[in-house]
Image 1 (spheres, rainbow, N blue to C red):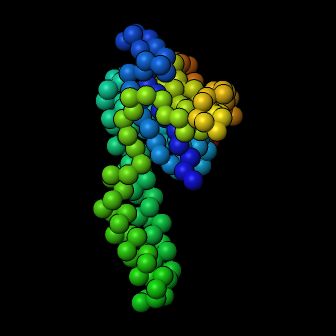
Image 2 (image 1 turned 90 degrees about the vertical axis):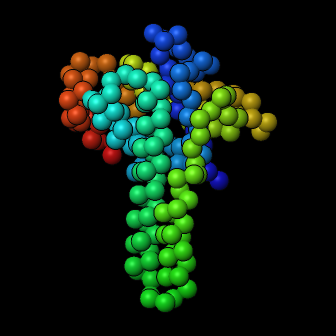
Length: 186
């Protein structure tokens, strides 16, 4: 089963200061966990410094470009994975034929899978990420069997990459440099 999540971009200055009324709400169908190479933290760590350097705080463009960045990241990962598996399989074998087919599908179909613009909070998410001007907050979401939310428990990330308010880190991000603490996550 997929690990679903939602990413909320909120901005108190624009009158959208909480998850019930965000500027942008993104749904990610799989790999919604924080950790790992394909996790959301890795995607945000890769994306946010570059975006902030070139665009600054622009919630509409941030949401659109974040989705595009995550789709491209997923596509690159899948193409690389199937290419490596195809290369390892014996030429002409059933495995080689299968991985060649999956590689072609990854090149064509991944653009249309896995992400969406949300109008409401989904009932099946396991994690929530809230991007604000101050940083990113990560929540573990628990629900009962009927999909009713039991709790949203905030995580304290061990590398504290979420703190975008420190002037030295913000300056580095705006210059396109990656603070040391961001590098520890990847």
